[in-house]
Image (cartoon, rainbow, N blue to C red):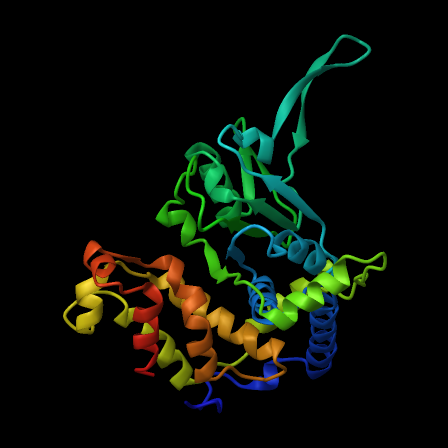
Amino acid sequence: MNSEPSQTTATHSTIDENAWNDLSAKLTQARQETAKVIFGQQTVIDNILITLISGGHVLLIGVPGLAKTLMVETISTAMGLDSARIQCTPDLMPSDILGSEVLEEDGNGKRSFRFIKGPVFTNFLMIDEINRASPRTQSALLQAMQEKHVSITGHDHSLPAPFHVLATQNPIEQEGTYPLPEAQLDRFLMQVDVEYPDAATEKAVILATTGNSQQSVNKVLTVKDLTDIQTLIRDIPVGEKVVDAILHIVRQARPDETSSQMVKDYVDWAPGPRASQALMLACRAKAFLDGRTAPSIDDVIDLALPTLKHRMALNYKATADQVSISDIITDLSKGV
């Protein structure tokens, strides 16, 4: 695999070197602060950070008890972001998330409506078990995620900038759930799977969390620092070979006459152009997180799975033949 950046489509001269070094150092420190509290989940942490500095939203898939909520609290503290948490239930209403207008009367008897903001008005919103919310509530979240504003009684209300959603799903318990529509899944830049820790990590966790002393997390970045990083990332040059690798994986995932037999046989729903955009941004962000000035083809291969897997669906034949989306993407990655 080629880990060297190829010929680039832009020059690095458009980037302020001092700003680059300062923001890169702060992000590295935030990464270290998070690792003080979250053990053995460095890939998950990195993918969340990559999503944030790309300006996107992330979907976490994992069983309860794997510190997903703690990750959100820790990362939001280190990144200097205001955060809020919503526990989804089938009876959760859009107004419980977005807010609502209430009728008030002043001392002179004059009545007027006042908008009371919901928890969506924050920088970092954790939505726990998002698939337990009804389709009506999920559609309200879709507008917030895509348009960065919400509509209440015909009036638009802008959300704070930056605005990021971290949603969680339990992959086991499916009773009383509503599958996320494809349009909403496509709004998540990444799907990150949270696995069980290994034995050494779990031992470190129980020793560190069952005593009286607890690690504290320091605020490293500010909201302005994060928005500056998001702007800076879009100036990072990307080599032609990296762009071609992104296009190869995404376009070959679509079943047509040019795709592989595996894709033709098993893929029912394939990623669209938004997947290419997401993978391009994620590769730039990973390069920045690792302190590199340009992404490589290895970044494309590493990020293809979390960026594409929630943007694809397989048919019944794949289920019968025990073929997974991971198998498909791994096979596609071999071609780059």
